[in-house]
Length: 195
Image (cartoon, rainbow, N blue to C red; front, top):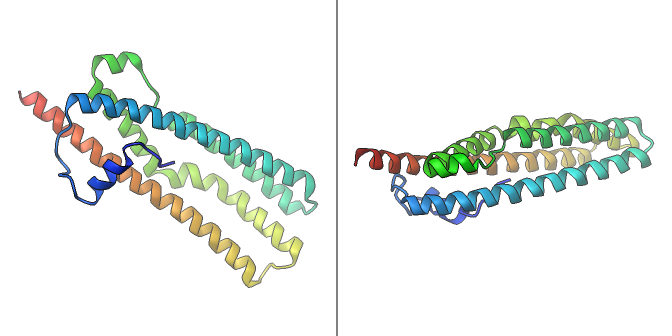
């Protein structure tokens, strides 16, 4: 979820190679607003494709596995994926050509703020819906294979926790980078307002 085109610029800003409050020129804001919108559309497309794959794979698991916990876990994962897709539609920023034409920096800033809020709360709306289904699914696998209390089961659960933690941390970092971008726009708008 964090593949934005200005990642390199934001990464440099995050590491302190650019002043954090250097204002952005209006032409630069226009360019970045366009690239940001394109990145959001690509990211959302990837997320919807991933949702379709998760639904297809776990529907297949529901059909082929006989263990009831695996079936229930698979259905819960499907429900979680659908909740995540719905949340993405609800939370993501959308282009507004009228607002863009009136005030590009305000429009871009509003989109950045909406995306920052979404990324900062990724644990609640993106990761949490999957947890019940994955836990039940893993318990079903453990029961079916007889590895319920084994080290292998603990390693599988630990790996899942590491993946979730990594996704959470990457999205939190992306949110921080967006906050820095918002601060630069605010600085530019303040400078423009003082002229």
